[in-house]
Amino acid sequence: MTALGAAQPRLASFEALDIRENTESALASLALRRGATKPVPFGLHLPEPGRWVVGQGVASFWVSPDQWMIEAEGRAEENFAAELKRASPDCAVTEQTDGWIVFEIVSRSGTAPLEALLSKLVNINLAGFGPGHATRTGLEHMSCYVIRRSEYHVAVLGARSFAGSLWHALETAARRLKE
Image (cartoon, rainbow, N blue to C red; front, top):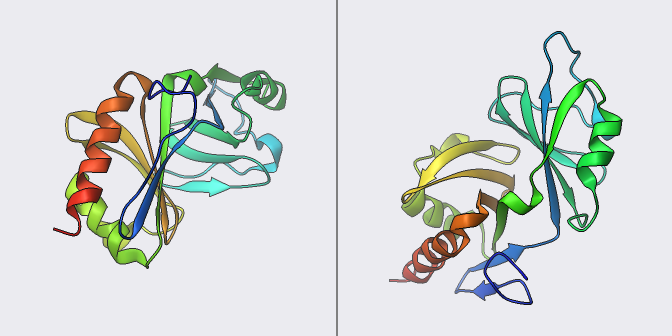
């Protein structure tokens, strides 16, 4: 069952945007232990603050000093955290997949609709928030991460416990773009 309570992930299409519930992404947090060397798990160089990087089958965004979230697309049903722990033995690794919901938002007609949607929802300076950027921000009453995966693609990660509220906020704002 998905975070939104259905057998299949939810997808909504609007005039210029698609919003999709991503149920396939595995998530694990990785934190350096005191005195540990910053690892390069699966060949991925962990990003600096405010950044998101993608490698072969994995991606990462900075969460806090010496802590990152690691994503593995298509691996939600695997024990990805255990594999990450083997790749980063000097770090603390915590499974996060079931604690978060990921919504992928893709524009089908340039950056304007995507940026219009974000400007209604989050307090992010979009002029400096290009591909490869990630940040934690508030969206209505919820805290979430926003990742700029490409010019036309943004991911919003929020706590699974408020998946319905986050979906409602995204869907309502997307529907109102044409108004």
